[in-house]
Length: 171
Image (cartoon, rainbow, N blue to C red; front, side, top):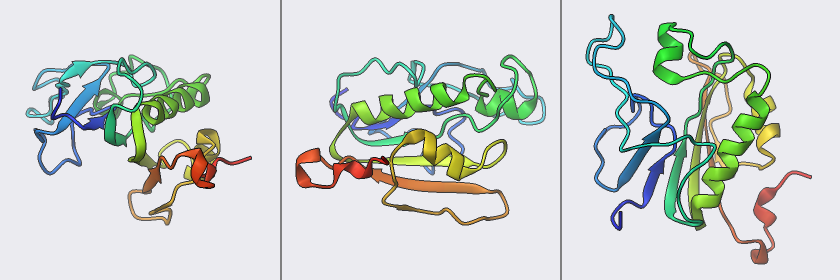
C-alpha cells in the first residue's frame, strides 16, 4: 500500500474519476456490485479495492495525503433497489447526522497533516448548509452555488492546531 496515498472513502461506481483505476488511489466501499446490477446501465459496477464502511476506516491515523469523500446524498430505506439508491447508497432518515459525522471524522482521522479532503454533496435530500453544520468544520473554499444538478464540491485542509488556524472548527 506504499504507493496508495489517495483514498476514495465511498467510491461507488467511480463516476467522477477520469482514471477509474488511478494507481495511487485506494478505492473503498461497503458494497460490491457486479456489472449489470442495473439493467439500464449494463457496464456500471461497484468494485472497491477493499470492502469497508466509511464510518469505520481500518487504516492508521494520518495514512493519506488526499481523501475524497462522496457519501450517500439520499435519505430513505436501505435495501431499496431504486436505481439511484443502488448506485450511490442511502442514509437512514433517523441516523444520517450521526452516520455522516462519523464518516467525515474517519476521513479526517486518516488524513495526514496538511492533507486535503475533497467533499462532494448533492442536494437531493438535504441542503449543503445543513450538511456543513453537521460536519462542524468550515471548508477553505468550494462550489457552494446552485447548479443544475445541485452538486457542491468543498475543499478542506488538515492544518495542525499549533498553526493558529484551529482547522476552522465551528464553535
